Structures are given as structure tokens and as C-alpha cells.
Length: 605
Image 1 (cartoon, helix red, strand yellow):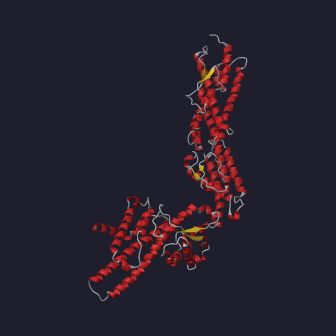
Image 2: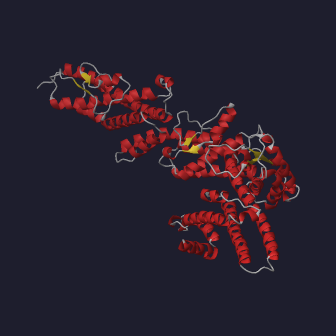
Image 3: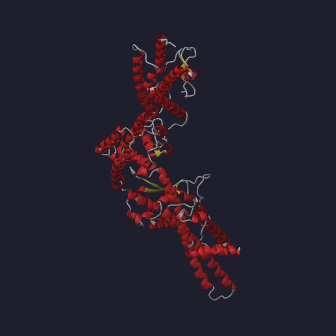
């Protein structure tokens, strides 16, 4: 059959328009409705194809023309994605649902389409030449784009679907990373280039964070998540954002390990701290400029690589960390004397300065024997607190002046430990200067105050047990003298009551002392033991308790049995699971005495 050259030339002209993404009467669009909406159609939802009205084209040629026309459909879908995600897109300017990573991907896809447009110019020159090219020649010229535009269309459709959900930059990086691992060299090169564009955003964000301490993440895509801010000045809000920043493990790129991410988080916080000093150093930049230039140069080298170099990246992060850590060490440990402050916290919050707190409880005995007066309780307790410092080693402690004792009215109806009396709400306030205030934040100090309140309660119980021992010893001596000339059942009954009372007091003292040692050494709280300790109050008037001795002994034994049963749990007896709790149990059950007593008591019941 003779070829209609005039009709064929017109058909190639229409094909050029279709390849450029414009449909018409000859090459029609199957998904025109979808293209007019905001949705990006999938491969199954539309295409460009030769109209059925063009009946003079044979079926083999129609198949080839439809295959070539699909390139125009892919081109149009990719262009629509680029228009939506470009840096200056009006859609993004009107919406806050943007993405730096998608915009960078759009830039990479624009490079691909530019190459495709250049190829279309070459095809146009052939079509407008003296002799129109055959379809097989056009297939050959556009063969690479049959793969590239097809896979790029799949990519933008999948990214568009991800954007409808809680999209993160790492998902796009992971997707591109997987697509770049393929056996087709041309497709691998294209996906690696798109991945390079997205890595540029990642590296620039990390450079801003590690060099300047700034988190440039307007759309919350980075694996460094900023914390919530409260009301205050702009500088205060920035400080709160940096201090509350954490690593979002779900947003980590494939080639950044959690350990490296933690290092990056530390670097950014440390750099911000060094660039925004307070106190006597306000207005100074504590990070040397030569170090800053080294950091910038190291990150610039990473950005110039054609692919992400994991080993070089980790080496650069570690080099920055070592420099920042050295400067931070001099500031916090040497200049601000962090070890001295930590020692002071241990001395006063964890009651390690025993002579001071012994004197304090003795001095405050008369004050704490009465319920606190809301109007003057804090002033009343502050007097013995400061007097005790002059009678103990705290007198020579230069940091003692930064501690202030506070009394807060107990709040009813809130969870927490049970209260013994109104003085259980005593707390310590510690004044620390910059930069230690960032480490010893209010939330950290509130935890130390919980430890302080509980340990102070144990100390008060321990002191009362010692006083009860003195009273018991005096009573025993007095009774022994009274009954020295008495024989019979009365003597035996009185002495047995006193021995039993000695026994109960000794058990209480043993438990309280070891629990105090355990918490001071390991900084752990056991709520069940707290209730046991707070449920028993040693009394000094032993004459009044003789008749109540059996009830006191039984209640205390029951509570201790519950504690030992809990510590004997099979889950806790495994030393690898809870070594410190096992150590507490062995300390309390020294030589198996308590365990044997429990077994004997169970047999008797």
C-alpha cells in the first residue's frame, strides 16, 4: 500500500505536540478529567493514544504511535508534579503542607525533563527535514525515555500518595535509594541523580544544625524533631526548641544509624549553647571561628559528592563532635565546675552529707512536731536549716548558700506517694548559673526533689527508731531493776514483751536503713516499700504500746512479707534482669534469716 506522505507528515506534527504533553483531535487523552483536578493519575488511569477516527493507520503503526504518545502523558504528569512542588509554586505559597524534599525532587525531575525537551528538539528537526523519519527511528531516539519517564511517573504518583499521609523526608530518600539499586544503568543513573538532589536538602539541614545550631525544618521533615515552645521572648522560645529537640527514629534516613543521629543531636544542642552564652559570657561566641570554617568545609565536601558517602559522613560528624565536645568540656566541666555541683546535689538532695541532716532534724524536731502553719512554715523550717550548717561540715561548703528549703502545701487528690504529715512536702531549691541550668533543668531538679522527699522521710523514721531504742533501753533497765527481786509469771511476761518490742524495732530499723542505702546508691524508688515504711510510726512512749504490741508486730510482719514475696518473684530473681533489686533482697535477707522467719511464720499459721 502506498504511503500517504502528506498525511504522515501531519501525523508526525501531531505526535510532536503529544510528546510535548499536549493532546488534541489526533492524539486524545483518556484521563482528561483527572488532569483537570489536583490528582496525579496513575499509569492505569490515563494515557495519550491515537484517535479511532484516524482509520488509515495500520495496527502495527498504531501500536508504535500509542507507545510514543504515552511519553507525552508521562511528561504531562511529571510536569504537573513539578508545578505543585516547585519552590515558587502558588499552591505551596497558599498552603503550609509543603516539603523541602519534594521541592528538591521537583528540581531533579526538571533536569530530566530539560534533557527530554532537548531530545524533542532533535526529533523536531528530523520531522521538519526534507524526508520524514520512519517510526522505528523515533523509537530509537526516545528509547531511553520510555524507561525514564515511565519510572519517574510511577515515582511521582507514589510520592503524591505519600503526601496525602504523614509524609517524612526519609520516606522519599528511602524510596529513591531502593529505586537506585537496579540493573538498568540509565535508570540507576537517573535515580541516583534524584537522590542526590534530596540529599542536598538533608546535608544542608544537618550543616545548619551542626555548624550554627539552627534547625531549618519548616515542614517538620527532619529526623531532628523540635520540641514545643511556651510563651516568652523569641530568644527564649528558640532556646526551648533546641533544648527539647529529640531524634525521631521513624524519620531516620536509611544510611544514618541511630548512634550517629544521637551524635548529631548532641552537636546541634552544644553548638547552639556555645553560640548563645548567658551570664558573664553574654554576647560572646565561644566556638572558635577556625573550627566553624572546618565544619563548613567538611559539610561542603559531602555536598559535592555525586552520591552519599556514609563512611566520610560519619567521619565528618565525629570530627565535629570531638571539636565541639572539647570546647564544651572546658566550659561546663572546668569553668562551670560541673563535678562540684553534682557533688553538692548528691550531698543535699540525696542526703549524702549525713552530719548536716542529722543536725537539721534534731534542730527542727520541735518545729516538725507540730503541723506546719501555711503562713510561716517555710520561714520556720529555714531557721534550723541554716543553723545546722554552722554545726556541720556544710559550714565550709561554698555551694550551700545556693540551696534553699521550700515548703509547699500538700495537694490533695493527686497521685504519688502517701504522706506521713504536712512536712513531707519539703523540697530543696538549687540556684545554678548558666550553662548548668540547661543540664539541671526544672524537670531534672523535680526528680531530685522526689528523691529528697523520700530520703528525708526515711531519715526521719530512722531517727525516731533510734530515739525509740533509747527509750526502750531505759525502760528495760528500769523494769529490770524493779523486777530484780520479783519471781514468777509477771517478770517473765514483762521481759518477753520488751524483748518482742526490741525485735520489732530492730526489724524496722534493718529495713529502713538498708532501703535508705539502696536508694542512695542506686537512685531507685520502690513504691510498695514506701507504703510499708509510711504505715508504721515508731513511738517513744513504750508504756502505751505494750498492749498494742501484737497488732503492731503482725501488721509490720505482713507488710514485710509482701515486700519479700515481691522481691522473691521469679522475674526479679534472675540477676540479669534486675541485679540491683536482687542485691537489695540479699542485703535484707542476710544469712537467710528473714526467709527462714517467713517460712516459720507460714507454718505456724
